[in-house]
Length: 292
Image 1 (cartoon, rainbow, N blue to C red):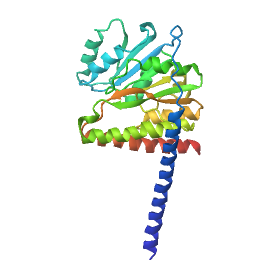
Image 2 (image 1 turned 135 degrees about the vertical axis):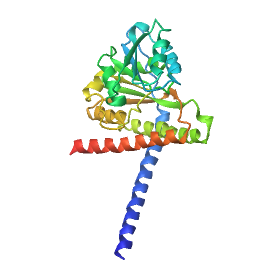
Image 3 (image 1 turned 45 degrees about the horizontal axis):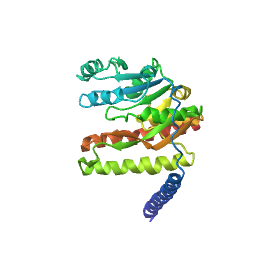
Image 4 (image 1 turned 120 degrees about the vertical axis):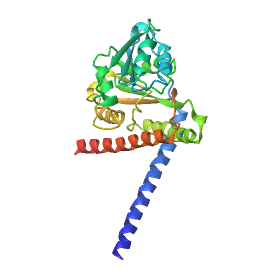
């Protein structure tokens, strides 16, 4: 009988967890509907007082999409004398040659090609390495499978007139949502996160996370929070928590879109979900340890 009671207790605890989680999600849904009615308008920047911006593109063996990414960032609507684009290339294949050949076609753009051979710290290490020589006071980040909208910078930099704003995160949209059932299911799950969870949390002043790409940071915020660290698989989530614990304000804008490709095959999806899940657990453990 004691074994039966043990499993009964475990079952009841699990059901209570599901119940409380459902209440939390319902609360976020309520805040989502409320926030849609009072969405603040975009803050457009003064064209005569635009800050210097560095766009960082962390790349690793992306030969199939790197051409598209470079063409997209070259079309960003921003004064060329105030825009720097860092290509943080850790590639070990022909991607490096493709990049160097491609950027020669844009002599008017300040492309900075930075190649590391050791990949220390992986993406976090590449971002930290690039930040050391970045010229911008604002740092925008895009992964290789994204196609930044030409108006991204002009729609986001205006929010940084508030000195307490450390990050503006945009909403991911999907270039290949209709490709298969797998991509449609992924789009549904991501839309729930970006539309309900991110909006709901931001509306009540709760912590939100930088999603690793499609966002723009204040350089001072990154440095104040301790810079990028590579001791978790989700360096974006880790830095987000550290920055907000320091008092920096994060802004989420669902009306600013950052299109990207969804993984089309199950192996890529499993790898992505494993990284996000394990990284989230590592960040929770790290954050709790710092609170004790």
